[in-house]
Amino acid sequence: MQTRKFVVGNVSQAIQVVKKEMGADAIILSMRTVRQPNGPFGTRQMLEVTASLDRPVAKPEKTLRAVVDDNAPPADEAREVELSLADVMREMGVLRRRLEIMEETLAESSLEQKLSQVASNIDDLQLSMREVLMAQDRREQSDEMLYNGDLGRLVHELRLSGIGDDLVRDLLKDTMQRLGKRSLSPDIYGVDYLAQSVMDHVRIASPFAPDNEQQIHMIVGPTGVGKTTTIAKLAAQQVFGLERSAAFLTVDTFRVGAIDQLRTYARILDVPLEVCLSDVEVVEAVRRHADKDVLFIDTAGSSQKDAAMIGELAKVYRAGVPMNVHLIVSAATDGQNLRDIADRYGVMPLSSLIVSKLDEATHFGSVYNLMHNARLPYSCFTVGQNVPDDIEDATPERVADLLLSIAAK
Image 1 (cartoon, rainbow, N blue to C red):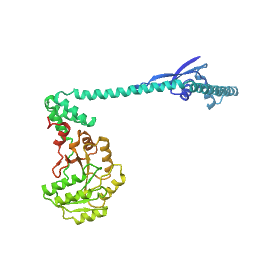
Image 2 (tube, rainbow, N blue to C red):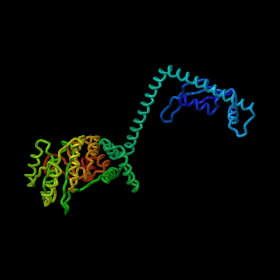
Image 3 (cartoon, helix red, strand yellow):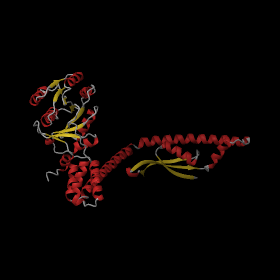
Image 4 (cartoon, rainbow, N blue to C red):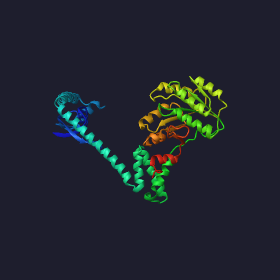
């Protein structure tokens, strides 16, 4: 008697493997569940099958080959072949029934075992998650412990600011490459080169700089980020600082007092104000003020989830008037909401990112992530409510200071 063991995934695989390796005459003697290594994922439950064969494996093959051989055997041999085939079919039927009985028995008797296995798998998963988290902590600690003094402190501050781990590693890699090319010590020159790396990774745009052509700027963003006051500050720079002519257009007819607020700023700056109820009226207002150097379009604040309102703003953009669309967000907004805002307002081509309320934010990392991941350049920052003073052009140096607090040290 020939006896062999196989480890398979299930009963169906057991039948296939036994037939393939030992032939159709083989009989499965027993089955039991075993645990097998599963690489980095621990172990998994398998089925160990014990099978036996009374006759040599090759005999059925020779008998079956005789049936299909071109040189047909004598009648007595043919009958022997037919009997052998009948035996094979009968044995297969018996084997199939045994396997069905064993499978039913396993299904009925292994509920407790399955529950135990589920609990074991949960424990294994929790252990794996703990190992991943511990590895992440070790990697972050090793990044910070790799550098001494001020450089190590700034690496820690970058993480605390909310910058993504991948971006922190990119900045550190760039810093160390620069130091390595010049054979400079990270302990002495690390802070300066890290700040330079941050500045080199910052995207900056200057869309409000004077131009020979008329400029039209539409400011969009969620509710409460300071769109109207920011427009007033930008217009004051153009009128008082650059001595350019300007006009206000507003499509914000939803917020109570919005038009009155903008009308007050228009009176102070001595610029005209147009209230537009549709994209068609925006086009007509632009034509009436074709002699102005710069036009600012104020919009209604809306939740990034308000697709209808954002769609109306997109209609204004597509009305046929060339304009720049600037997204304004609050520096105090968390990273997930910033990503969502940029995605929703991204139905329009965005020219720049205006960051408001720097004076209210404790961390700048989320806004840095947005600039990098959405590929939106900064144009300006607002740092308070005072018009026209509390606004500044975005610069790489200012961003580096916001992230690293270099000027305060």
